[in-house]
Structure formats: C-alpha cells, structure tokens
Amino acid sequence: MDKTAAETAGSIIDGERVWLSIGGRRPIKGYRERFEFRLMTADEAASLAAGERCWFFAHDGTAREIKVNGSPRTWKTRPGDVEIPVKYGLYEHARASYHGGLVAPGGVLLLVATDGTEPIS
Image 1 (cartoon, rainbow, N blue to C red):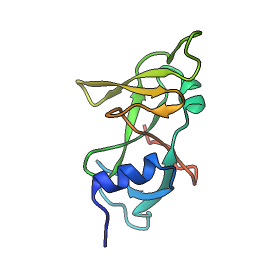
Image 2 (cartoon, one colour):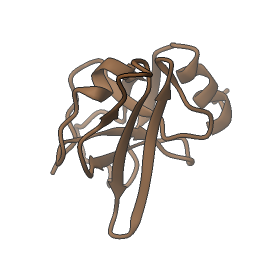
Image 3 (tube, rainbow, N blue to C red):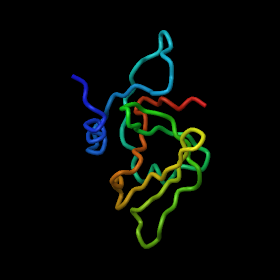
Image 4 (cartoon, rainbow, N blue to C red):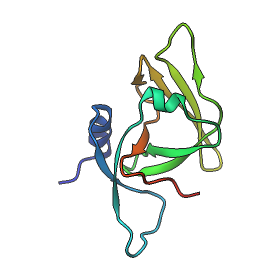
C-alpha cells in the first residue's frame, strides 16, 4: 500500500530515506521509475550557490527539480538558521527554511538523491 503525500513528507522529516518517482517527466524506456531520496541537512543547504539545481518534495508525492534563486541567508546570532530562496517554473517562488538545523514547518522540503541522481537541465 502506497503512502499518501503527507505521510511520505512526515517520513522524510523523520529522517527516513524514501523512494520517490520523479515528477514532470515522461517515462523513458529502460530508465528507472523510482529513486531513493533523503532530506537535505541545513549545512548542505547553506552550501548551495545561486543557480544550482536540486530536488524538492512536491505536493503530489514526487520529487521535482528546483533552482536556487539567490545565495542562502545565514545569521551570526542564530547559527542553525538558514533561508534559501528558490524558484520553480516560470513564476513560482518560495523559501526553504531551516530553524535550529531543522526544517521549518510548512517550508519547502529540499532533498538529496542518495544514489547520485542529478537534476537534468
């Protein structure tokens, strides 16, 4: 039985590795359907640069590409807090936030492919 998108998001936040299909792509013959992902840590997110592409967890339960739209923001007074401006598609903008090293509630879940699958651009 497949999990719902909300249950999968809960599993990702709890630190589990999950298998997700990649959304927004047509299936390619001979290409795997599902890939293993884990939640990106605050340190990994802080090291992202503007223009880099990474994965995020979409509301439909798939992994999709997202582009870092600026440099990540960090604070001297709050070392565990990071904000990363991101862009998806032509008009969608958001911020991925980590507070105290944990993902902020309601924020964008940035993912890392554990098998090295890179976004295609």
